[in-house]
Each structure stands twice: as C-alpha cells, then as structure tokens.
Length: 322
Image (cartoon, rainbow, N blue to C red):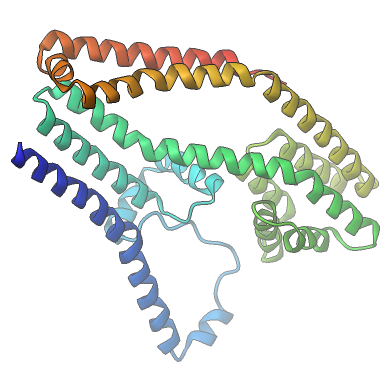
C-alpha cells in the first residue's frame, strides 16, 4: 500500500512539474533568449524596415522539429489552432498536444496502479487526454458569449465614427481602441491586417472565420456589400446593431426558460460519479470488489457509456434554436 501511495505521489508530481516546465518555463526562457538576441543585433533596425507586412503563420510549437512535423498535418492541426484562437489562449498547438499526451500517460499508469484492468486504464487515459480540449472549448464558448454581448456596442461605436466623418479603417481602429477584450483585440487585428497590405475583403473574411457568430457574418456581409454597391453604411450598422440586440434578448429569454432543464442535466450528470467517489472513501471494500471482478469492470464500462449517452441526449434536448 505504501508503494502504491509513493507511486501515485511521484506520478502526480511529474504530471505537474513536467507540463509546467514544458508549457511555461521553457517557452519563457526561449522568449527571453530571443529578445536578448534581437537587442544585441546591430542590424535590428534595418531588419524592421524590410520585414514583411503580412502576418506569418502562427507558431505551432516551441520545439522546431515538432513544429515542422505538425505543419505537415494541416487538416488535423487547423481545427485545434482555430480553437486556440477562439479561446484567446496564448498556448501553441504543440504545447496542447504534448500536455494531452502527458495526461494520457499519467492517467493510464495511475489507473493501472489502482486496478489491474487495462480497459479501465484506457478509459481513464482517454478521458484525461480529452480534458484539455474540453477546457479550451469551454473557454472559447465563454469568450464567444462575451463577444456576442459586446458586439452591438462595437457596431454602434463604428456607426457613430462613420457619421462623424471618419473613414472605415479609422472607424475600425476606433472600435479596437475603445471596446475592451475580446471585441477590441479582434478589431485591432482586423485594422492591422488591412492596414499592412491585406485587402479589406480578405481581412473581413478572416475576421468572420475567427468569430463563429451569425452576427459577425451579418456585419461582414453588410460592410462588403456597401463597399461594392454603395449606400449609407452608418445607417446599415445602426439597424444591424438593433437586430443583434433583439436576437440577444431572445437568446437570454430562451436560456432563462430552459434553465430548469440544464440544471437537471447537470445534477443527473454529476450525481453518479459523486456518489461513486463518496462510496470509494466510505466503503472502499465494495468499490474494490467492483473494480477487481471482471464482471464489475464491464458493469462500470457500461454505466460510463450509458451516462455519456444520457448527458449527450439531455444536452440535445436543452439546445433550442433561436
């Protein structure tokens, strides 16, 4: 028993220190070395003058060889890179993949120390590896919700700037300076892209791709249509802001009406694992019998699968299109 406790302690210590050094300490040291090298370079000013104006592709990993390997798998890497952009996280794709791999290994070894079942170890390892992706998706969802809440105000600021006589790029810059995150940085990036050589349609298309909202697509369509056909863009933006606010009110009303179903889903989803955890501490012999017996392992696997299906079905029922 003492050996198992020491092994679990070592695994947890490795699981904490190795990702901390990989994701935080090592990238900071590399950034500091790169900064010192640029400061010592006598030709830095000339390099800034001839630097390309377009933004390079995001760095996939701080490890050069690993980053080159990931660059070849664009179809698999691009969704994760898009998720990182939407969540506002400064981590690289390589760091997330390595962290998921560390969690996979640690969870598998830790489960094998507690139970000899390879099936349980595989399930625990997969759940641990998927946890960072689920965290990023949750963070991206919260950021998009905040963006949706701030977006009508940003459109109003842009419409007022246009009515005051400013040009469209200057109105976009005004939004980037006056609106807080996450809307402000997105508009600043939009301004920088079209100001440093990217055409306005391409910059607006990239803005819509980074922001998976119907309102953002409406905004991009309105601006590009006005650039092609002409018209009073400030009035169009004011009407668009009013429509977005009404849609936001409807969405809040739908969330309030469906709050009971969501709370019920959370209770039904967390009740079985919480009860299992309490039984593990209050009556460990029953849990040990369930995990050591092959039939008990199959029962646990079936319960987990049915629980996941139930959570998925409850979420589908609670999702209301508006």
